[in-house]
Length: 85
Image (cartoon, rainbow, N blue to C red; front, side, top):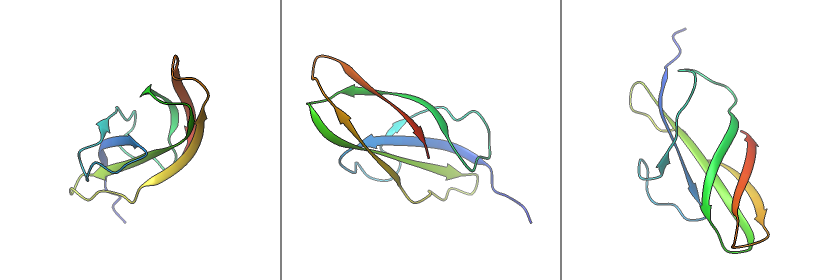
């Protein structure tokens, strides 16, 4: 069975911008069953937020969105979230 290779990845916070319109980030391997790494998030208001991640394969198909909630406690700092998705 041939496995499609990943060619793009994106994330967005809280609201859906549209497929392919999120913030792009680098993927280290062309295939992955799990992502682990740091994503630098924009400055956010204090409160609960949702980190959304999706990937695109070599035939142009985007994955479903993987979501993780996180809490940001201050608007004066950038929030970081270590996500194993």
